[in-house]
Structure formats: structure tokens, C-alpha cells
Image (tube, rainbow, N blue to C red):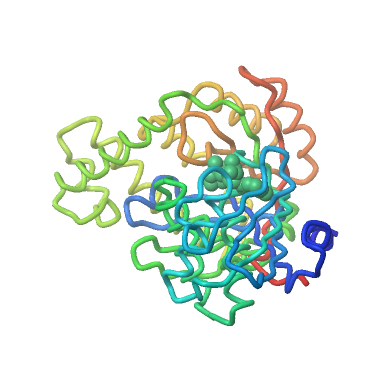
Length: 375
Ligand code: ADP
Ligand code: MG
């Protein structure tokens, strides 16, 4: 058991028991791509791969972190200097720093020992899993009781201000707020959330995440460019964000590029609500065509797909997936496929056979519970 693994690693490193062991999951976004930075909705679910943190306070002013990930070294910092953390330690120590800004005591030393089972850099948000497990551990053990939305904000702040990654709040919100079997409908403007039971398992449906292991060099620049196009389109339409634009107004935009970028956002926002409606009325299989439409929109209107990913989407659908789409910011990355259980093997094989680049990694993910205390 993985919680015991984290506890045992803590004992071995520090010669005492941790005060507690906490875990938080990775996530995948079912639908709602590039809607977040337009103040729209996203629909992520937490996955059945988690990161565990065994935590205990020290009686001096050191904060130590170690992980069993082979790419990491243990790090120790003095409590007042957490914001200077770099490398992998920026995620856990940045989270502790962010919590201190919200009133968690900033003069206590900590030992944090990490055991992770979310693959790193595979589009499943191992970073939010780590931040969220640390945030819950520190919140519960100190009795700060900041509430899960505040813990999600602390993880995001760690990533924005200490790691230096301009991410939104979706990943941390999913990791902290999701319930087993459900996705989280998140309004990226108001931050309001709603549980959405998916019913995939009951319908014999499995979600596969196929990592193309391709990432194009223009990913960062491409992402910034698409964000800028969305801002420009909203300005041209006289709305605060594209979330507020109507389809008719978008179709009347004079600039062809802005019109296509904006069209993706307004149709994708509609697709999020369509998926919520379909699973709510007991028709999860009908989500497939909505995912297919999302992919076509991301490929043709938003122009963030690449051939290496398109062939995986086509292979998945050809082998029996009811729908598949590129997932994540784009320019490479992973494909999410909704697959009848009996077609899972065939879809995996078809994706591996169709790959233009390195052999893709195929992972089955199930909607799992959010962050929790395990020991
Ligand atoms: P993703 O969140 O999609 O997996 P990121 O690049 O955002 O990818 O975050 C991955 C980084 O988070 C890793 O490079 C590492 O620094 C840190 N990280 C995540 N999980 C762990 C872990 N279990 N142990 C150590 N570092 C981790
Ligand atoms: Mg991440």
C-alpha cells in the first residue's frame, strides 16, 4: 500500500513516525480546452493515480523535502527562505510558503516525504497532485482549516510565484475537490464548482489517455499566441472575455484568424454544458461525438493540434473509441479517448501502430476521489 510506503520512507529518513500521511490525485480534463483563460468552464476529473506525502513537524527551523522519484535530491531550507526553493522542491516548499501567506505558522520546521504514482510530465498533473497533498497535510496538521478552495489557490500560487509556471486553478481544484466517479464542473470566472456524476463505469466505458510523447518547440509561444488572439477577439467584440461572446457575434468578426479562434472558445464552452447535460440524462456514450467535435475544433479552428496527435485520435476512433480528442494546451501532448471496455486493447494497439513519433504510452484512468488523509 502506497500510504504505508510513504510512512515507511519517512521513518527511514527521520527515525520517527510521521504525524500523518495524505494523498492527492492527478487529473485529466474531459472537455473544456482553452476555455479556462477565457473565463469559461472546464470539466476535469481526478484520476486513480495519486501522490502521497508523509508529514511531521520538527523542533528546529528547517524544512526538508525528499521524494522517491529518481530525478530528485533531498532539499533542506530554513523556514523563512521557502520562496527561494528551486527545481522539484519549488512545488512542495512553494505550497508551504503560499499557505504561510494565508496564516499557517511560518516559524515551524517540517519534514515532508513524497511517494508519487502520478507519471511526471505526462499531462496528468503530477505537479498539482504534489501541491495538493502537501497543502492538505499542512492544513490538517496545523489545524489551520483554510478550506479546500484556499488550498487549491495555495498550490496555484506555488506554481505561479515560486515554480514560475503561469497555470490556472483547474488542476489543483480537481485534485482537491473531485469525488469518486464524478467530474468537477468549474466556472473559471466565479470559481463556483459542481459535482457531475459521469456514469462511465456503469455504461462499460473506460477513459484512455494516450501520451504521444511529442512536444513541439513552439508549444510555449503557441500557447501565448492563442491567449493573445482570444484577448484580441474579446476586445473586438466588446466583451470582458470570450465566455461572454455569442456565436452570431463571433461569426460576424471580420478577421478570419480571430473568428476561428473565438469560434473554438464559444463552441467548446457549449460542449462543456452539452457533456454535463448528456451524462446528467444517463447518456454517457453520447459524449463520444462531443469529444470528436472538440478535437475538430481544436485542430481546425484553434489550430493547436499536430499530425502526431491527429493520427492517434483517428486510430483510437478507428479501433472502437466512441470519441477522442487532443487534451492539454496543444502542440503535442496526449489524447483522451472514451472507449467501450471491450475495445481498450484494440485502441491501445491501434495507437501504437499508427504513431508517427515515439511509441505512445497508453494509460487507463478512472474518476477517483480527491485529496484525503490516509494515515
Ligand atoms: P505534470 O504536472 O503535467 O506532470 P509538470 O511539469 O507541471 O508536469 O510537473 C512535473 C514536475 O513536478 C516534475 O518535474 C517535478 O519537479 C515535480 N513533481 C511532480 N511529482 C513529483 C514527485 N512525486 N516527486 C518529486 N517531484 C515531483
Ligand atoms: Mg503540472
